[in-house]
Length: 170
Image (tube, rainbow, N blue to C red; front, side, top):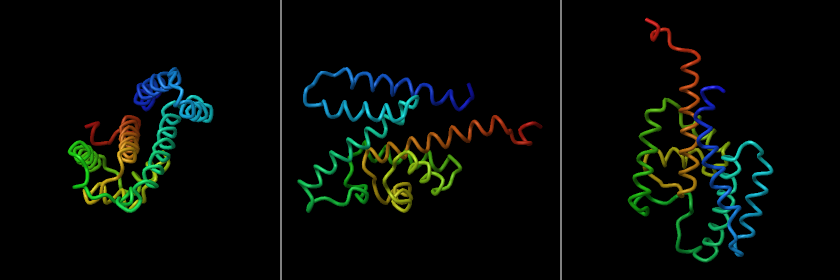
C-alpha cells in the first residue's frame, strides 16, 4: 500500500458507509435516487468515493434544474453568485479553500484540471474568481474543488516522500 493510499482509504470507507446508508433506506419516494446510486457504484467498482461524488453531482444537477425552472428569472447563474449572496458558513468554507490553495503550491490550471476530472462543472476562470473571493460556486462545486485540492496536496506529499529535496538531506 503506497502512501497516497493512506489518504484515500478513510475517504473510501466513509463513502462506503454513506452508500450503504442510502441504499438501505426504505423511503418509497427515493427509489430513483437509490437506483441512480447503484448505477454509479456499478460503473466505478472499487472507487466508492468517485461513485458517490458522481451520484451527488447528478442528484444536485437534477435538483438545480428543478430550482432553475421554478425561479429562472430571479437567480444569478449558478456559477456566478456574489460572495455577499452566501451565508457565513459558505463564506468561511470559501475562505478556507482559498487559504489552502495559497499554501498548496499548485497553479489554478492544475487545480482546475483535477477539479474538472472529478466532475467539476465550473470554468477555469470561475474557479480562479472563487479562489480570489470574487465569486462563489455552488456548495457541491465547492466541495468538488476542495476534494481536488486535497488530492493535489496528497500527491505532492507523496511525491516529496519519494523524491526528497537534496536540501532536506543536509
